[in-house]
Length: 331
Image 1: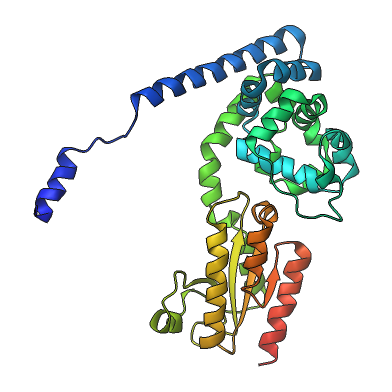
Image 2 (image 1 turned 135 degrees about the horizontal axis):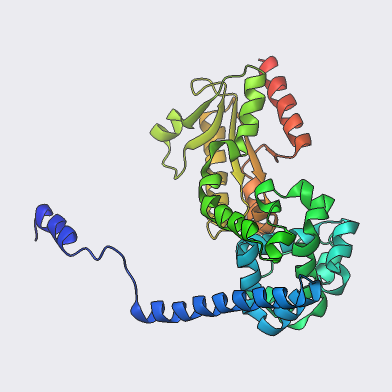
């Protein structure tokens, strides 16, 4: 058997630095070239015919999947972001939004009956591309969203400013300053997501700070020493680890993930352990975001773990504040 030093030197000496498959790279470069050409074609169409809705509808009809990718690139909207937005448009009961996107012409019966049948599942990229290709009203909907979305009150209220600013006629006109904005937002998106101030948990922190309520984060000692569980790190332990009265976990998901099912199962197990080892503590959860909305079965399992569940809606945050004060004041 090789020594640890030999194995270490082998990795250093024969490191490939970056893995790539030449065949894959060649094919993907062709794809990038095609998207770039589609963007150039759209820019020329706008220059020659004007920044009109029919120009973008024709572009999406003629270029199909490439057209949608090009439009998203120009505006700075990600494919995942578009899927989330379409899901929200399908489930929201808002007359202005419905008129904007001709909702009754393409959304489907399961969406139009949302009040009676809440289990709307998210559409795949393939389905969205097929609707762009085959459904005239869906194409109009996509164009209207980017063309007129900045004037829609519901979108102003729901979307973060970072995403809402992508609805810009200047971008569709290929104004250079607007394109620079697209590039800047693309570059900083990851950094923005990582900022602590942008984490919804900061809303809970503000409530606790406003009421001078102490809290800890981290591992619960009893679970480490007496139970082998995958996750023991808690987001909020109120008022402290020594004598926890409220233990809260937060899960805000904008995107869906394959691990949601595993997370929900883990939380149920953690909830059982907390009941056993911390009988005086109440285990609650903040569960919110479109990522949970479209994964209903995982959501149903997830909420089983908690004695109560809150979202980050303003009414729910007020309810949480009253909930915490009632428990602590009764001690």
